[in-house]
Image (cartoon, rainbow, N blue to C red; front, side, top):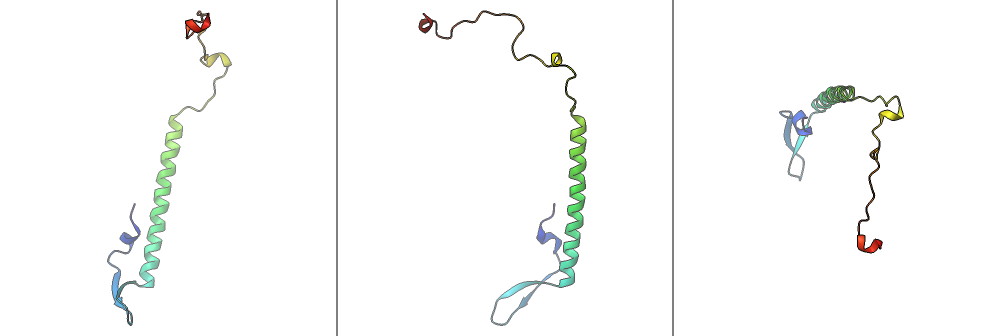
Amino acid sequence: MKSAAEYLEGRVFEARRPRRNLQAVVAHADAVQAIEQALADAEKYRYLLMRALRHHDAAQPTAAPARLADIRPAFPATEAPVLPLYPALAA
C-alpha cells in the first residue's frame, strides 16, 4: 500500500511565504486527484481483503456435529485407577 507522500510524488513544489522558510505546496487539483487515487486504491485493497477472508472462511468447515456422540469425549471411556499425586499425604 502506498504512503500518503507517494500519491503526491512529482506534484509538490516549494514556495516561500513572507518572512518564513520554504514550504511544500500542492495545487488544489493535484491534491484532489491524489485523494481520488488513494480512495480508489483503498477500495481495491478492501475488495482483495474481503475476497481473501471469504476464501479463508470457505476453506474451514463450520458445520456442527449432528450428534453429541460425534464429539470426542473429554475423558477416556475406560475406567483407569486414580492414584494420589502425593502418596505420603494420602495416608
